Image (cartoon, rainbow, N blue to C red):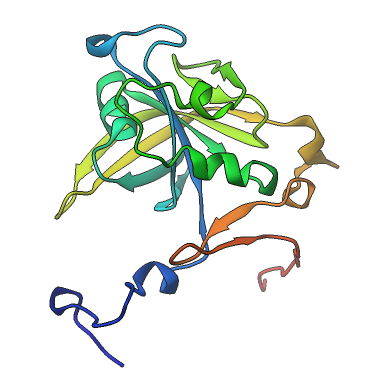
Length: 198
């Protein structure tokens, strides 16, 4: 089968996100800028994005992309966001925060996610996440259609102590969740090391 996205695929569901998988999940936390109230607990938002990845190493940079909902709007207004890493244990709570809550709803409180403050930026974070990346917005790219790509420099990193083993951040300690297509997810349970050739 071959199809041009502009012409449609003719299938019951789009295969695109199933083809580009597995994808890491950014559980993005933001706080509304001064225009919509600011300060701890005021206008806090938490939402998952599976169009997410690291895009640079020195300095570290990440991106997430989606429609202009609260996360993108808050990041644009405040200039900061945090990426909380999703584990199997928080998978269902993460999914609950994907609901279309009215603007201004504190998703942490709405679904019962423990909240903590970031260290370098004025932004909430998921208290028990295996890791959190505190980010300052570098650029927001308005993409064709209704998508916006938010690129941030990582200025602070939280790592849960139990995930550090022999000086390495060990993903087997928390079982990362990944997004597949449709309503499907995967969990990383097997890790193999493969060194690059000299």
